[in-house]
Amino acid sequence: MTRGNLINFKWRQLILSLGCLLLLIACNNFYPTTNPGAKPLKVATDPTFIPFEIQTASSHLEGFDIDLMNALAKVAGFAVQFESLPFDGMISTLQAKRVDAAISGITITAERLKTIAFSRPYFKAGLAIAVREDNQNIKDFNSLKGKKIAVQIGSTGADFAKTIPNAKISTFNSGPEFFQDLLNGNVDAVVSDAFATLYAIKNGKLKGIRVVADLLTQEYYGIATPKDSPHLDAINKGIGTLLSNGTYKQIYQKWFNAEPRQLPDFWALGTCTERLVPSVPLQGSKLARASGREVEVSRKACGIASLKAQPKVEK
Picture 1 (spheres, one colour):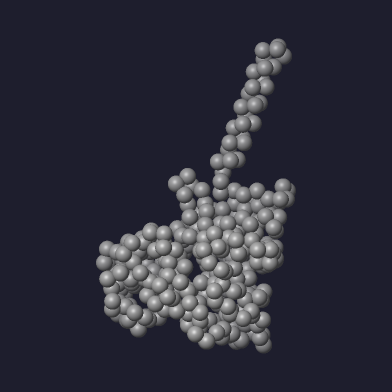
Picture 2: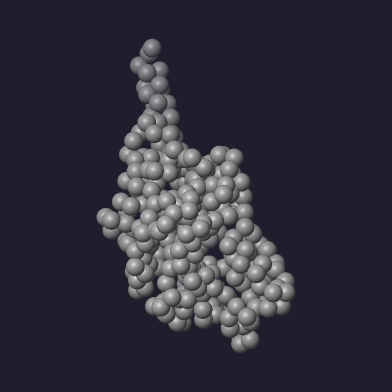
């Protein structure tokens, strides 16, 4: 090989190497592992659930759930490859084992536990009613009777809306869609996650909308996996590590500017659920202390005598 050809060859190698490096940087939905030999975990998420999942203009994923999953992967030693999916398709995708896990504000329910598995709870949330600011008629659950209600397809808000007598329910794929329908006057109220709604109002994303005083439910979010997932134990241990080393608190405060709400300290969520009495009021845009009614454990659903749960502490 001549000197000129050798130089050209080296330049081509350098350009190829730089191209590969730029390609890796551009793939910002892939997050590396501390264990280079580990196969990436395919994690489904719906990037319309702000502030839990957000897709930026450059297609980068961010949000509370995204930060949590990346931190969890770091302490557990695996890689994460996010895949964007509509929320209503996540359960079936997990059942078919086309992804290894899903994180997208997915509430742990007895019905979902029939077909998929969940990690230990990583977030305590609840449903709330959102109305237009000038609406003074809708004040609580009873006010929703016979009203036009908007919900997200496949959500616990959609399930809850079915219990409202004579309600006319409209379903949407994402929050921005049903909130726009509310602003347009096509529906009377939206039933959706309280934290996501309050965050959007606080940050000016929802103008002309307010949250009605009382939470309708209290729920736990979990990381969903297929049944008998080999990754569930590592995910649970990772969540425990983040809770104990202060990382969870840092992520929570970054997105909600508040102290984390207390989580139950139990692991047997593959076979049990917790039913929570809807007793936490909202004062303005802040969650207030519960009024005394605490956790009602469904022993029949759990199939065990008792559950160990931490005392409820509201900040």
